[in-house]
Length: 312
Image (cartoon, rainbow, N blue to C red; front, side, top):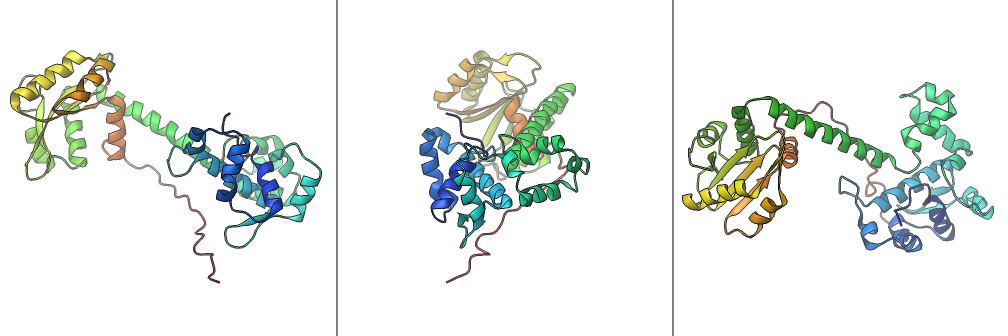
């Protein structure tokens, strides 16, 4: 089954905390078992790759219940159900969700306060409060942030490729120079420019030093396509040129994509040939700050558990 959303996880987490003081990692496996999650589902990570989805949702379920006064911190990172939490369980609720938590004044006060600086109107309109991101029905705030980041990255990737296609072929070559230098190839911009785009060999657009001393070289082929795919014949021609030059390493870059036949072809070659399609090209440009700049940086901080752990 799908990984339960954080609201669905509130009830089983509260039941576990009513038995004894617990930590999220201690009950994560049991809750996963109770919901019949597969190994893959248990290992599913947030887009950032820094935490698995189930653990993230359990932590947020705990956080919101703390704000409602249903659970409270015990020693260290442990937590336990409060009298209010135990009383709620005694009523045999079928679920615990945001709607129920809003019945607790402490939670309502927390949520109203957390939104006062960003949306004054939302404090006066319960429908708007319900729809605000912090009380989204299925996703945690971190999931919302990461989804928004992925959407921004996707839009930026598409715009980068569009801008490259709007410029000249020589500009595309310069993009590759900038990227390779940013990734540590070619030594300097001047040396890379001298190497790339000036070899004149059939099937090869340029050669660039793999290191600053020029101990090894990488041959480059660039195809600036708006539509269509680069097929095996183009890649095979490039590999043939590498063989003729006695080269062992090559990079084929395109603004479009490679056919499955082309991708399969390079897997078993004696030469090391890397295919970089438009999406990967844009991703590398973003990663190495080529053609992009930071417009705004936002820091997200967490409690330092070690700081608050007193030695016995």
